Image (cartoon, rainbow, N blue to C red):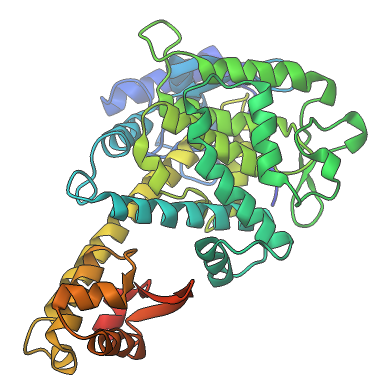
Length: 450
Protein backbone atom coordinates (compact mmCIF):
# COMPACT_ATOMS: atom_id res chain seq x y z
CA UNK A 1 0.00 0.00 0.00
CA UNK A 2 1.31 3.43 -0.94
CA UNK A 3 1.31 6.39 1.41
CA UNK A 4 -1.18 8.95 0.03
CA UNK A 5 0.13 12.02 -1.78
CA UNK A 6 0.24 14.95 0.63
CA UNK A 7 -2.36 17.67 0.00
CA UNK A 8 -1.25 21.16 -1.05
CA UNK A 9 -0.23 23.48 1.78
CA UNK A 10 -3.31 25.53 2.68
CA UNK A 11 -1.26 28.57 3.63
CA UNK A 12 0.40 28.63 0.21
CA UNK A 13 -2.78 28.29 -1.84
CA UNK A 14 -4.88 30.61 0.34
CA UNK A 15 -4.23 33.78 -1.67
CA UNK A 16 -6.57 36.65 -2.46
CA UNK A 17 -6.84 35.54 -6.09
CA UNK A 18 -7.67 31.95 -5.20
CA UNK A 19 -10.21 33.03 -2.57
CA UNK A 20 -11.99 35.33 -5.03
CA UNK A 21 -12.03 32.58 -7.65
CA UNK A 22 -13.62 30.15 -5.18
CA UNK A 23 -16.28 32.70 -4.21
CA UNK A 24 -17.02 33.56 -7.84
CA UNK A 25 -17.47 29.86 -8.56
CA UNK A 26 -19.94 29.54 -5.69
CA UNK A 27 -21.97 32.50 -6.92
CA UNK A 28 -21.99 31.24 -10.52
CA UNK A 29 -23.36 27.86 -9.42
CA UNK A 30 -25.91 29.55 -7.15
CA UNK A 31 -25.43 26.67 -4.77
CA UNK A 32 -24.26 28.55 -1.74
CA UNK A 33 -20.90 27.96 -0.07
CA UNK A 34 -18.64 25.12 -1.28
CA UNK A 35 -19.34 21.75 0.34
CA UNK A 36 -17.13 19.49 2.42
CA UNK A 37 -17.84 16.51 0.17
CA UNK A 38 -17.80 15.70 -3.52
CA UNK A 39 -21.03 13.94 -4.51
CA UNK A 40 -21.44 12.62 -0.99
CA UNK A 41 -17.83 11.44 -0.58
CA UNK A 42 -15.31 12.83 1.91
CA UNK A 43 -12.39 12.77 -0.50
CA UNK A 44 -8.69 13.08 0.25
CA UNK A 45 -6.45 15.05 -2.09
CA UNK A 46 -4.91 11.74 -3.22
CA UNK A 47 -8.23 10.92 -4.96
CA UNK A 48 -9.43 14.44 -5.71
CA UNK A 49 -6.36 15.25 -7.83
CA UNK A 50 -7.44 12.61 -10.36
CA UNK A 51 -10.93 14.10 -10.83
CA UNK A 52 -11.95 16.92 -13.14
CA UNK A 53 -12.42 20.15 -11.16
CA UNK A 54 -15.46 22.39 -11.69
CA UNK A 55 -15.23 24.77 -14.64
CA UNK A 56 -13.18 27.81 -13.78
CA UNK A 57 -11.21 26.20 -10.92
CA UNK A 58 -7.81 24.56 -10.72
CA UNK A 59 -7.37 21.46 -8.56
CA UNK A 60 -5.71 23.58 -5.88
CA UNK A 61 -8.58 26.08 -5.85
CA UNK A 62 -11.09 23.25 -5.66
CA UNK A 63 -9.20 21.76 -2.72
CA UNK A 64 -9.14 25.15 -1.03
CA UNK A 65 -12.93 25.44 -1.36
CA UNK A 66 -13.43 21.98 0.15
CA UNK A 67 -10.99 22.56 3.00
CA UNK A 68 -12.57 25.88 3.94
CA UNK A 69 -15.96 24.19 4.10
CA UNK A 70 -14.55 21.43 6.31
CA UNK A 71 -12.91 23.94 8.62
CA UNK A 72 -16.28 25.62 9.11
CA UNK A 73 -17.70 22.29 10.33
CA UNK A 74 -14.63 21.12 12.26
CA UNK A 75 -14.82 20.06 15.91
CA UNK A 76 -11.52 20.21 17.78
CA UNK A 77 -11.08 17.05 19.84
CA UNK A 78 -9.26 16.40 23.11
CA UNK A 79 -7.30 13.65 21.32
CA UNK A 80 -3.93 14.57 19.83
CA UNK A 81 -1.56 13.35 17.18
CA UNK A 82 2.06 12.48 17.96
CA UNK A 83 3.13 16.10 17.34
CA UNK A 84 0.66 17.40 19.91
CA UNK A 85 -1.84 18.84 17.41
CA UNK A 86 -5.51 18.05 18.15
CA UNK A 87 -7.43 15.76 15.88
CA UNK A 88 -10.52 17.27 14.30
CA UNK A 89 -13.75 15.85 12.92
CA UNK A 90 -16.15 17.53 10.48
CA UNK A 91 -19.67 16.12 10.48
CA UNK A 92 -20.66 16.51 6.83
CA UNK A 93 -24.12 15.95 5.37
CA UNK A 94 -23.59 12.30 4.45
CA UNK A 95 -22.07 11.60 7.87
CA UNK A 96 -25.09 13.15 9.60
CA UNK A 97 -27.40 11.07 7.41
CA UNK A 98 -25.66 7.81 8.35
CA UNK A 99 -25.62 8.77 12.02
CA UNK A 100 -29.39 9.20 11.85
CA UNK A 101 -29.77 5.76 10.27
CA UNK A 102 -27.59 4.13 12.94
CA UNK A 103 -29.35 5.95 15.75
CA UNK A 104 -32.72 4.81 14.43
CA UNK A 105 -31.81 1.16 13.97
CA UNK A 106 -29.08 0.43 16.51
CA UNK A 107 -30.74 2.09 19.49
CA UNK A 108 -34.39 1.61 18.51
CA UNK A 109 -36.24 -1.52 17.48
CA UNK A 110 -35.51 -3.54 14.38
CA UNK A 111 -38.35 -5.03 12.35
CA UNK A 112 -38.46 -8.75 13.01
CA UNK A 113 -36.12 -8.37 15.98
CA UNK A 114 -38.10 -6.76 18.76
CA UNK A 115 -40.76 -7.88 21.23
CA UNK A 116 -41.97 -10.59 18.86
CA UNK A 117 -38.71 -12.49 19.25
CA UNK A 118 -38.44 -14.89 22.17
CA UNK A 119 -35.36 -14.88 24.36
CA UNK A 120 -33.99 -18.11 22.91
CA UNK A 121 -34.06 -16.55 19.42
CA UNK A 122 -32.25 -13.45 20.65
CA UNK A 123 -29.67 -15.58 22.42
CA UNK A 124 -29.13 -17.53 19.22
CA UNK A 125 -28.62 -14.38 17.16
CA UNK A 126 -26.27 -13.02 19.81
CA UNK A 127 -24.10 -16.14 19.81
CA UNK A 128 -24.03 -16.05 15.99
CA UNK A 129 -22.80 -12.44 16.08
CA UNK A 130 -20.22 -13.13 18.79
CA UNK A 131 -18.87 -16.08 16.82
CA UNK A 132 -18.72 -14.05 13.60
CA UNK A 133 -16.96 -11.10 15.24
CA UNK A 134 -14.53 -13.34 17.13
CA UNK A 135 -13.56 -15.19 13.96
CA UNK A 136 -13.21 -12.24 11.61
CA UNK A 137 -11.50 -9.95 14.13
CA UNK A 138 -8.90 -12.67 14.70
CA UNK A 139 -8.58 -13.42 10.98
CA UNK A 140 -7.84 -9.74 10.36
CA UNK A 141 -4.78 -10.21 12.57
CA UNK A 142 -3.53 -13.48 11.16
CA UNK A 143 -5.62 -16.34 12.54
CA UNK A 144 -5.70 -19.03 9.86
CA UNK A 145 -8.36 -21.30 11.37
CA UNK A 146 -11.17 -22.15 8.96
CA UNK A 147 -14.60 -20.73 9.63
CA UNK A 148 -16.31 -24.09 10.14
CA UNK A 149 -13.65 -25.38 12.55
CA UNK A 150 -13.90 -22.16 14.57
CA UNK A 151 -17.70 -22.34 14.70
CA UNK A 152 -17.58 -25.95 15.87
CA UNK A 153 -15.06 -25.08 18.59
CA UNK A 154 -17.12 -22.19 19.96
CA UNK A 155 -20.48 -23.97 19.76
CA UNK A 156 -19.25 -27.13 21.46
CA UNK A 157 -17.06 -25.38 24.05
CA UNK A 158 -13.99 -27.33 22.93
CA UNK A 159 -10.68 -25.87 24.11
CA UNK A 160 -8.51 -24.24 21.39
CA UNK A 161 -5.81 -26.41 19.89
CA UNK A 162 -3.52 -23.90 18.15
CA UNK A 163 -2.62 -20.22 17.84
CA UNK A 164 -5.44 -19.32 15.45
CA UNK A 165 -8.09 -21.06 17.52
CA UNK A 166 -6.78 -19.39 20.69
CA UNK A 167 -7.15 -15.93 19.12
CA UNK A 168 -10.75 -16.67 18.17
CA UNK A 169 -11.53 -18.25 21.55
CA UNK A 170 -10.14 -15.18 23.37
CA UNK A 171 -12.10 -12.78 21.18
CA UNK A 172 -15.33 -14.68 21.78
CA UNK A 173 -14.93 -14.71 25.57
CA UNK A 174 -13.90 -11.05 25.71
CA UNK A 175 -16.89 -9.93 23.64
CA UNK A 176 -19.17 -11.82 26.00
CA UNK A 177 -17.55 -10.07 28.96
CA UNK A 178 -17.90 -6.51 27.64
CA UNK A 179 -21.16 -5.93 29.52
CA UNK A 180 -19.21 -6.33 32.75
CA UNK A 181 -17.47 -3.00 32.06
CA UNK A 182 -20.31 -1.08 30.42
CA UNK A 183 -21.61 0.54 33.61
CA UNK A 184 -18.13 1.51 34.80
CA UNK A 185 -15.86 4.34 33.63
CA UNK A 186 -13.07 3.27 31.32
CA UNK A 187 -9.66 3.23 33.02
CA UNK A 188 -6.18 2.24 31.82
CA UNK A 189 -6.42 -0.85 34.06
CA UNK A 190 -9.64 -1.87 32.28
CA UNK A 191 -7.95 -1.46 28.89
CA UNK A 192 -5.05 -3.60 30.11
CA UNK A 193 -7.46 -6.29 31.35
CA UNK A 194 -9.30 -6.34 28.01
CA UNK A 195 -5.97 -6.59 26.19
CA UNK A 196 -4.85 -9.48 28.43
CA UNK A 197 -8.09 -11.38 27.78
CA UNK A 198 -7.79 -10.86 24.03
CA UNK A 199 -4.14 -11.82 23.71
CA UNK A 200 -3.60 -14.56 26.31
CA UNK A 201 -1.61 -17.38 24.75
CA UNK A 202 -1.33 -15.65 21.36
CA UNK A 203 1.66 -13.33 21.74
CA UNK A 204 5.26 -13.94 20.76
CA UNK A 205 6.21 -12.97 24.32
CA UNK A 206 3.60 -13.64 27.02
CA UNK A 207 4.93 -10.69 29.05
CA UNK A 208 3.55 -8.36 26.35
CA UNK A 209 -0.02 -8.97 27.50
CA UNK A 210 -1.59 -6.11 29.46
CA UNK A 211 1.36 -3.73 29.32
CA UNK A 212 2.55 -0.83 27.18
CA UNK A 213 5.14 -1.35 24.49
CA UNK A 214 8.54 0.09 25.33
CA UNK A 215 11.05 2.09 23.30
CA UNK A 216 13.08 -1.12 22.89
CA UNK A 217 10.13 -2.85 21.22
CA UNK A 218 10.49 -0.46 18.24
CA UNK A 219 6.91 -0.90 17.02
CA UNK A 220 5.98 0.50 13.59
CA UNK A 221 3.07 -0.21 11.23
CA UNK A 222 4.16 -1.72 7.92
CA UNK A 223 2.42 -2.99 4.80
CA UNK A 224 2.83 -6.50 3.43
CA UNK A 225 6.06 -5.51 1.64
CA UNK A 226 7.71 -4.11 4.78
CA UNK A 227 7.19 -0.46 3.83
CA UNK A 228 6.65 1.73 6.91
CA UNK A 229 3.20 3.32 6.87
CA UNK A 230 2.96 4.75 10.38
CA UNK A 231 5.33 5.43 13.26
CA UNK A 232 3.26 5.61 16.49
CA UNK A 233 3.89 8.12 19.31
CA UNK A 234 6.86 7.58 21.57
CA UNK A 235 6.51 4.88 24.22
CA UNK A 236 7.09 7.29 27.12
CA UNK A 237 4.00 9.27 26.09
CA UNK A 238 1.65 6.28 26.22
CA UNK A 239 0.50 6.50 29.89
CA UNK A 240 -0.63 10.10 29.43
CA UNK A 241 -2.19 9.39 26.03
CA UNK A 242 -4.16 6.41 27.32
CA UNK A 243 -5.47 8.44 30.26
CA UNK A 244 -6.56 11.17 27.83
CA UNK A 245 -8.35 8.55 25.77
CA UNK A 246 -10.13 7.19 28.86
CA UNK A 247 -11.22 10.71 29.80
CA UNK A 248 -12.53 11.18 26.26
CA UNK A 249 -14.37 7.84 26.40
CA UNK A 250 -15.98 8.69 29.74
CA UNK A 251 -17.27 12.09 28.66
CA UNK A 252 -20.96 12.46 29.45
CA UNK A 253 -23.85 12.60 27.01
CA UNK A 254 -25.21 15.88 28.36
CA UNK A 255 -26.06 18.97 26.33
CA UNK A 256 -22.89 20.81 27.30
CA UNK A 257 -20.38 22.31 24.88
CA UNK A 258 -18.38 19.08 24.67
CA UNK A 259 -21.24 16.90 23.44
CA UNK A 260 -20.26 14.62 20.58
CA UNK A 261 -22.48 12.08 18.90
CA UNK A 262 -21.80 8.82 20.81
CA UNK A 263 -21.33 6.84 17.59
CA UNK A 264 -18.62 9.26 16.49
CA UNK A 265 -17.07 9.06 19.96
CA UNK A 266 -16.99 5.25 19.81
CA UNK A 267 -15.34 5.33 16.37
CA UNK A 268 -12.72 7.81 17.58
CA UNK A 269 -11.86 5.56 20.54
CA UNK A 270 -11.25 2.80 18.00
CA UNK A 271 -9.19 5.23 15.89
CA UNK A 272 -6.98 6.45 18.73
CA UNK A 273 -6.00 2.97 19.91
CA UNK A 274 -5.00 2.09 16.35
CA UNK A 275 -3.10 5.37 15.96
CA UNK A 276 -1.26 5.18 19.30
CA UNK A 277 -0.54 1.43 18.98
CA UNK A 278 0.06 1.21 22.76
CA UNK A 279 0.77 -2.54 22.73
CA UNK A 280 3.30 -4.76 21.01
CA UNK A 281 0.49 -6.78 19.42
CA UNK A 282 -3.30 -7.03 19.62
CA UNK A 283 -3.97 -3.33 19.05
CA UNK A 284 -6.63 -3.93 16.40
CA UNK A 285 -8.52 -6.46 18.52
CA UNK A 286 -8.41 -4.11 21.51
CA UNK A 287 -9.55 -1.13 19.43
CA UNK A 288 -12.56 -3.00 18.06
CA UNK A 289 -13.50 -4.35 21.50
CA UNK A 290 -13.44 -0.81 22.94
CA UNK A 291 -15.61 0.39 20.06
CA UNK A 292 -18.24 -2.19 21.05
CA UNK A 293 -17.87 -1.18 24.71
CA UNK A 294 -18.55 2.46 23.85
CA UNK A 295 -21.54 1.64 21.63
CA UNK A 296 -23.16 -0.59 24.25
CA UNK A 297 -22.47 1.98 26.97
CA UNK A 298 -24.39 4.55 24.92
CA UNK A 299 -27.44 2.30 24.51
CA UNK A 300 -26.84 0.99 20.98
CA UNK A 301 -28.00 -2.51 21.95
CA UNK A 302 -28.19 -3.79 18.38
CA UNK A 303 -24.40 -3.64 18.03
CA UNK A 304 -24.23 -6.83 20.07
CA UNK A 305 -25.82 -8.57 17.09
CA UNK A 306 -23.63 -7.25 14.26
CA UNK A 307 -20.02 -7.88 13.31
CA UNK A 308 -17.94 -4.96 12.04
CA UNK A 309 -14.86 -7.14 11.50
CA UNK A 310 -16.72 -9.27 8.95
CA UNK A 311 -17.12 -6.09 6.86
CA UNK A 312 -13.58 -4.86 7.51
CA UNK A 313 -12.14 -8.19 6.38
CA UNK A 314 -13.65 -7.70 2.91
CA UNK A 315 -11.89 -4.33 2.40
CA UNK A 316 -8.83 -4.21 4.67
CA UNK A 317 -7.15 -1.64 2.43
CA UNK A 318 -9.87 0.94 3.06
CA UNK A 319 -9.40 0.51 6.82
CA UNK A 320 -5.69 1.26 6.70
CA UNK A 321 -6.10 3.98 4.08
CA UNK A 322 -8.53 5.86 6.35
CA UNK A 323 -5.79 6.08 8.99
CA UNK A 324 -3.28 7.31 6.41
CA UNK A 325 -5.69 9.92 5.05
CA UNK A 326 -6.20 11.29 8.56
CA UNK A 327 -2.49 11.42 9.29
CA UNK A 328 -1.55 13.09 5.98
CA UNK A 329 -4.30 15.73 6.04
CA UNK A 330 -3.70 17.84 9.13
CA UNK A 331 -4.94 15.14 11.57
CA UNK A 332 -8.47 15.17 10.14
CA UNK A 333 -10.00 12.05 11.74
CA UNK A 334 -13.16 12.48 9.64
CA UNK A 335 -11.72 10.09 7.05
CA UNK A 336 -11.76 7.29 9.61
CA UNK A 337 -15.20 8.23 10.93
CA UNK A 338 -16.52 8.25 7.36
CA UNK A 339 -15.08 4.81 6.58
CA UNK A 340 -16.28 3.25 9.84
CA UNK A 341 -19.80 4.62 9.40
CA UNK A 342 -19.94 2.77 6.08
CA UNK A 343 -18.86 -0.38 7.90
CA UNK A 344 -21.49 -0.01 10.63
CA UNK A 345 -24.28 0.69 8.12
CA UNK A 346 -23.22 -2.33 6.06
CA UNK A 347 -23.18 -4.52 9.20
CA UNK A 348 -26.68 -3.38 10.23
CA UNK A 349 -27.98 -3.96 6.70
CA UNK A 350 -26.37 -7.39 6.84
CA UNK A 351 -28.35 -8.18 9.97
CA UNK A 352 -31.56 -6.98 8.28
CA UNK A 353 -30.85 -9.32 5.36
CA UNK A 354 -29.96 -12.23 7.64
CA UNK A 355 -33.19 -11.91 9.62
CA UNK A 356 -35.22 -11.63 6.42
CA UNK A 357 -33.58 -14.77 5.04
CA UNK A 358 -34.19 -16.67 8.26
CA UNK A 359 -37.86 -15.66 8.37
CA UNK A 360 -38.31 -16.63 4.73
CA UNK A 361 -36.56 -19.96 5.24
CA UNK A 362 -38.70 -20.74 8.31
CA UNK A 363 -41.92 -19.87 6.48
CA UNK A 364 -40.85 -22.03 3.54
CA UNK A 365 -39.94 -24.91 5.87
CA UNK A 366 -43.30 -24.68 7.64
CA UNK A 367 -45.06 -24.80 4.27
CA UNK A 368 -43.10 -27.91 3.30
CA UNK A 369 -44.26 -29.62 6.51
CA UNK A 370 -47.95 -29.09 5.81
CA UNK A 371 -50.01 -32.27 5.27
CA UNK A 372 -49.95 -33.32 1.64
CA UNK A 373 -46.44 -32.05 0.85
CA UNK A 374 -43.78 -34.49 -0.36
CA UNK A 375 -41.79 -34.28 2.88
CA UNK A 376 -44.89 -34.52 5.05
CA UNK A 377 -45.80 -37.81 3.36
CA UNK A 378 -42.47 -39.26 4.54
CA UNK A 379 -43.13 -38.22 8.16
CA UNK A 380 -45.88 -39.00 10.61
CA UNK A 381 -47.88 -36.29 12.36
CA UNK A 382 -45.76 -36.54 15.53
CA UNK A 383 -42.53 -35.94 13.62
CA UNK A 384 -44.07 -32.98 11.78
CA UNK A 385 -45.23 -31.47 15.07
CA UNK A 386 -41.76 -31.84 16.57
CA UNK A 387 -40.11 -30.19 13.54
CA UNK A 388 -42.55 -27.28 13.60
CA UNK A 389 -41.69 -26.79 17.26
CA UNK A 390 -37.97 -27.05 16.47
CA UNK A 391 -38.26 -24.35 13.79
CA UNK A 392 -39.56 -21.95 16.43
CA UNK A 393 -37.07 -23.10 19.11
CA UNK A 394 -33.84 -24.08 17.29
CA UNK A 395 -31.84 -24.65 20.48
CA UNK A 396 -34.44 -26.83 22.21
CA UNK A 397 -33.35 -30.36 23.21
CA UNK A 398 -35.69 -33.34 22.85
CA UNK A 399 -35.61 -36.67 24.69
CA UNK A 400 -37.41 -39.90 23.96
CA UNK A 401 -39.38 -39.90 27.21
CA UNK A 402 -40.60 -36.34 26.66
CA UNK A 403 -41.73 -37.14 23.11
CA UNK A 404 -43.47 -40.29 24.41
CA UNK A 405 -45.44 -38.34 27.00
CA UNK A 406 -46.36 -35.52 24.59
CA UNK A 407 -48.00 -37.93 22.15
CA UNK A 408 -49.02 -40.74 24.50
CA UNK A 409 -47.20 -43.45 22.57
CA UNK A 410 -44.93 -46.30 23.56
CA UNK A 411 -41.26 -45.74 24.29
CA UNK A 412 -40.31 -47.73 21.19
CA UNK A 413 -42.56 -45.60 18.95
CA UNK A 414 -41.13 -42.37 20.38
CA UNK A 415 -37.61 -43.69 19.91
CA UNK A 416 -38.38 -44.65 16.32
CA UNK A 417 -39.76 -41.15 15.62
CA UNK A 418 -36.63 -39.40 16.83
CA UNK A 419 -34.15 -41.80 15.21
CA UNK A 420 -36.07 -41.43 11.96
CA UNK A 421 -35.49 -37.67 12.05
CA UNK A 422 -31.80 -38.28 12.80
CA UNK A 423 -31.67 -40.57 9.75
CA UNK A 424 -33.17 -37.75 7.67
CA UNK A 425 -30.44 -35.48 9.13
CA UNK A 426 -33.02 -33.13 10.59
CA UNK A 427 -31.98 -33.83 14.19
CA UNK A 428 -28.57 -34.57 15.67
CA UNK A 429 -28.09 -37.02 18.52
CA UNK A 430 -25.63 -37.12 21.41
CA UNK A 431 -25.42 -38.88 24.76
CA UNK A 432 -25.86 -37.05 28.06
CA UNK A 433 -25.21 -39.34 30.97
CA UNK A 434 -27.18 -42.51 30.25
CA UNK A 435 -29.83 -40.84 28.07
CA UNK A 436 -29.82 -39.75 24.44
CA UNK A 437 -30.58 -36.10 23.63
CA UNK A 438 -31.73 -34.87 20.24
CA UNK A 439 -31.32 -31.27 19.01
CA UNK A 440 -32.38 -29.60 15.74
CA UNK A 441 -29.78 -29.40 13.00
CA UNK A 442 -28.18 -25.91 12.95
CA UNK A 443 -29.51 -25.25 9.43
CA UNK A 444 -32.84 -27.01 9.92
CA UNK A 445 -34.93 -24.77 7.55
CA UNK A 446 -32.42 -25.29 4.73
CA UNK A 447 -32.32 -29.04 5.31
CA UNK A 448 -36.10 -29.26 5.24
CA UNK A 449 -36.09 -27.34 1.97
CA UNK A 450 -33.49 -29.69 0.47
